[in-house]
Image: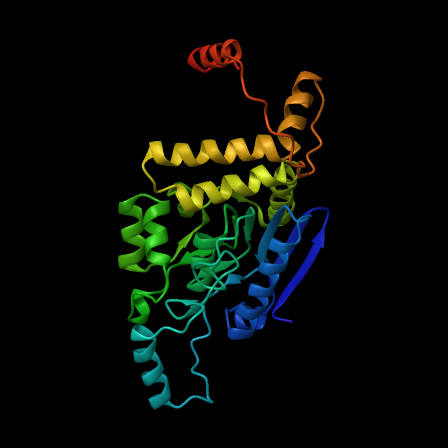
Amino acid sequence: MPIKFEKKDNIAYITINNPKKANIMDKETSDQLDAAWREIWDDHDMRVTILTGEGDKYFCAGHNLAPNPDVTEEEREFLTAERIFWPQSGTNNGQKLGVHGLMGDHFPRVYKPVVAAVNGWAAGAGFYTLLSTADIRVASAENARFKFALLSNGWVGGGPGATLLTRQINYADAMKILLTDEPFGAEEALRIGLINEVVPHADLMSRSLEIAESIAVQPPLATRMMKELVIRFGNLPTDEAWRVQTLMNQLLTSLTTDGEEGRAAFLEKRKPNFTGGLRKKGEPFEDLTPEQRERIDELKRTGGA
């Protein structure tokens, strides 16, 4: 199987499972990853995912660059040209839509948290997967290595990897990675902010699980919406993004049970039990009397609520 996929205690586990071929991203692996991400999205019990590679050498060492033997060179050239002007419906720049309706199917931005346990080489598609899909990245001190793998192959890439890189780390470090295309290790990745932590290889999965468990106890709907807020609206001007955040917060506090549970647990000095429950639609408010209107206006002015 190109991937291993299991679910346990609100946590999903995806392992790219082709170590003899460096855990490369071939079509079968891509299709199975897409199916796994969709299942994770649709399963409301799954609150966070740990993504890693099989073995201790490769997280994912890139795409399968071998041409499809069933496609002629002339057909390949024609398809490349046609996709520029006539991309297929249901695709984004020729790639099947991901679970969130954007990007490519194997580089999705899933609106649930993803912890990457980088166990070895993350090159090419492996590097881009970290940028597009993983929110928190933990790397093996001994084995993790990184390489963008574009210019050294003679191209700039058909995906959004370069754009994502320049938006996630500072410009000078991003351009050094892009223009030299040199490999680098976990400590350098930590220094430039590409990853969150470097741990001994023996502790990689336990530390990743520890992080995932700390996420899994958070309110699932608010956690999901926090990630969606950052990804979908993070590039808006601050006032506009703030407005979206305020509306999201009002939806969470009025239409879910977790907002009330969080406040109750704080006041009662206990741990909250977040379930992601939804509220029933309630009765409409009665029209305010002039006195009530005056009081509400005063509370709005003074922030008294």
